[in-house]
Length: 177
Image (cartoon, rainbow, N blue to C red; front, side, top):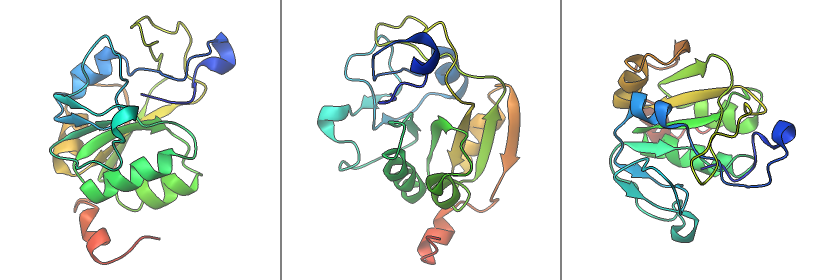
């Protein structure tokens, strides 16, 4: 789920809920938990879903996580939680200059797949937006299982290894940049 509208610039859509295209989920899944899922969704993203009413940041995360977090400044907290959990994949805009990216992706992620082209997110009813997102996207792997899922996904783009040893080691040392 995305709580800002990545396609609104071009499409004029007004919803704040944008769903991950099912082909991406199929290429990477299955997942145990989506801590920021849309409350009403036409397809599952994981075995367990927390929606906005469940406050996924305050709940316990277990297993392999799928995280298409709310975009904007609030994405920082989701990426921080992904770094601490260190077992999952996050879908975010490839805005490498942001503080969140510098601190919680480059500092802790195992690998990144910079996706070729731009994603066409889906509306809450499952229909495609018909327009690509307002920026390029990437998949962030936290941990070896997530890294392997991305490596074996056949999704097009550039897959870059960041840390052969998962980011948790840096967290244990207290490196928070």
